[in-house]
Image (cartoon, rainbow, N blue to C red; front, side, top):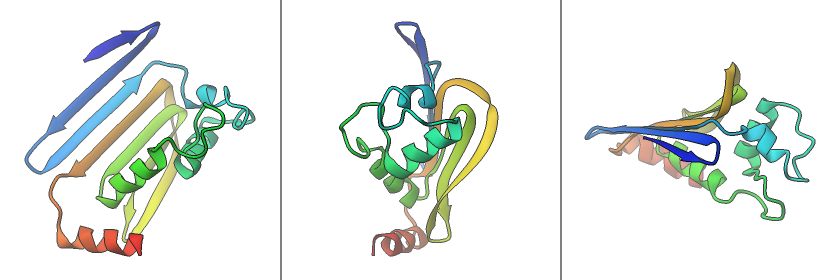
Length: 140
């Protein structure tokens, strides 16, 4: 589905099966770096990767005075703890969020330039005992 808001376009796609859910959201906006630079807190960011890092680590927002997160940091953790794989692309950078054994990991990489932002996720809709044990170890 394509929607238009002002001059920006967005695309949302999803696919479900009895065992898996996948979705992707993309827009052709200004991207995360340019958006974060609107905030006095993040105005000095110098790269797309730096923007991704403060979003993942601190829940950075372009809106001043909101503190960390607006929920994204907690959302990323909750999804990853349920074995979701998340990929966020913006500008010339990408980050893959997931689990490695019983540890949350964020792997940063360069990416072909992309206007706007793309967030993709895939996760199992069924829980297995191993995943339950990993989640328990992460919350203790």
